[in-house]
Image (cartoon, rainbow, N blue to C red):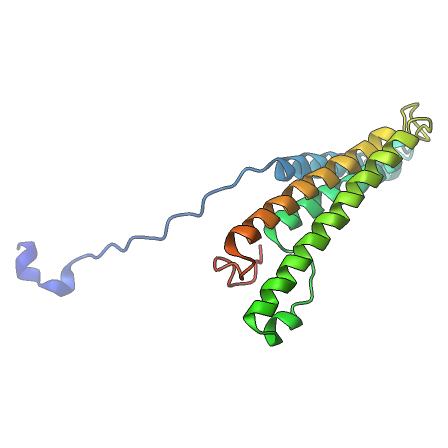
Length: 183
């Protein structure tokens, strides 16, 4: 029996699946990944030594705390890139389009200014913390605050990118962001 004699009902139809979305590789993603897993290993080591060996390592809690501080600012850079920082958008729904464009411009300028100040102060405190050492290790606290400064500068880089993208669109709403980003 040939394929033609079976008719249309017997034909196998293969539908093409949507292609997988491209995987993006960003500096802050890899940095957050490394810091997170380093922190996870240190916390597991703390748990293991405290509850299994009954002899806790003194440095694990302090280093895990410092890594948590750093990953907070690196994660803020990721949220800045994705545009998922918390915001109040009720004014965008009720204002006319020209006023929304002005509001978007003002918001972007304020964000750049705030993150720029954050970078400035992170550098200032990193310099001041050069003389203070960590509790367990004889390392300067400027290492910790330097990691925070790196997160702040990554956030400034992403905020500047969002500002330029907004300027190219004329601060109109981004047409590619019509849905809520949920991972």
